[in-house]
Length: 263
Image (tube, rainbow, N blue to C red):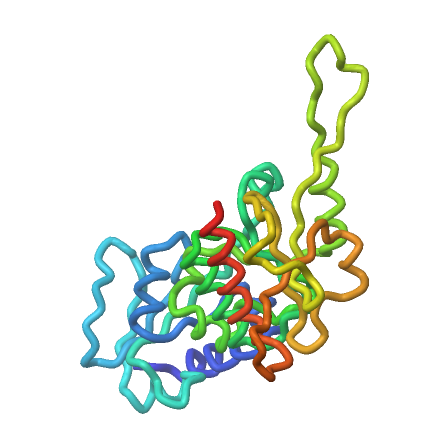
């Protein structure tokens, strides 16, 4: 049975400030909950309708069986999906040496929860392990973001940091010269690709992995603050259509596909 305090607390996690204070977030739906159970994310409690069969053997998770009417009270969905989990927000640290060996996504001021969730799912599909976001990008544990990931949140690490500082740190990778010439170090260039309307045609551009793919804000694109760190501007060509631009998640999918095709 669901207590009033439990219902009140779960409902409070719809707000970012309460997620930040508690270090908890909510995931809903059988697919998402099961994928999280199989990941390194810790699940505190599971609330499920009485007729839902959940396999949680060996997970040591508290399960509370509740009525469908109670599930509707605590769900953020218009049509609750049988099961809801309260999970701990994982603490990820940026591993700079690893980033230098991988293809990663960088998002600047992406504000739509559906877009971020879809981009996380795209990253998962293309084997991209890390997404680095500017601090003003929508919060990853927003319930709408979690739903849009369809479980990919359990496999893709999302970080928030000051992007210019990150770019400067990535650019300071020293490559040592042979020992007999070791009087100085040579700066290694780390590729930072920026998706811009005036960029080079992605299908005829030289693309390499590792590197960063930078995607900008839905309406404004990449800001002037970030442009100086872009080492190569790329774009998806328009083949005569009248659309002004592509949705940022769709553009991310097209660009990731081309990077993987050429890698």
